[in-house]
Length: 340
Image (cartoon, rainbow, N blue to C red; front, side):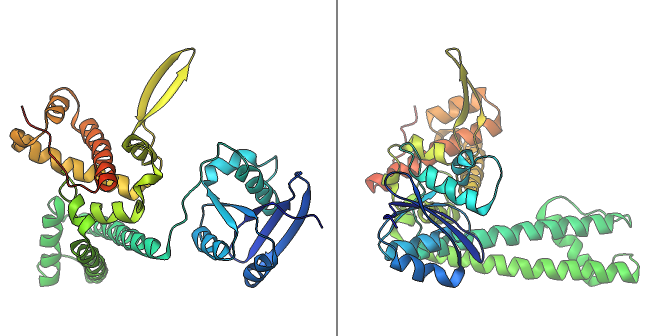
């Protein structure tokens, strides 16, 4: 059998498809592997380029195969999809991975270390717990509204409602009390779990000099600083801060034809959790800037004077992303622009 120079690997839970070709582009390897066969099979293979989609378990297998000496290239699934011909199957997907990995203009995903994935899992877990809390609160409000009980807006209104429920001052049928109490108890348990994860994130930020440095930028708190370092451990992966902001999806979408280019809404590509944290931080910073204009930069004051608040918040988030990239690249704290 001719020597395999490049391999396309389609990942799955239990069954993996391997598609290999030689330097001339001829198919010389097609195999279906079980999970337990993966490491042994690639340990016997000569060193080759392996292309995979950056999907579930991709970073784990990338680390394993890299330790065996292979050159692993992870690609966004959306960039591999155009190379799938006609029908879809695991074998065809593996061939598409081989085709995409050899493209000279293909963009590859950096392989995450296990520690980096563990740090990001803190944010993923906390986001899930917060979403579940929101669902429970909505269910509790909807249940009580059926009996004419409407709570005030915000977190304070929910807390007042739960206190009245536990005190037994609400006029509710017995079954409704049991259901509402179960929802309130579940919400309290989720809140305690989310607080535990947030305290761990805060503790790691306090122990990290770079994370403390990032918090000197406006609108950046412990969560944003921790997520930034976990998402971007090496800022040199991007040539400029604008490239990083574009990767986060905070730059306008371009639509050009016939020499005319129009800009639309932001692309929302890249990392949604980090983008959301930056936008929320920018929104909080806008509230401070509205109350104390002397603290805002001339650029921000000009934007606030002529643009809607939500548009300004996204623009400030994109600006913050570029600032954080520059701070990590030069290892310097934030220097505020002089206010005229």
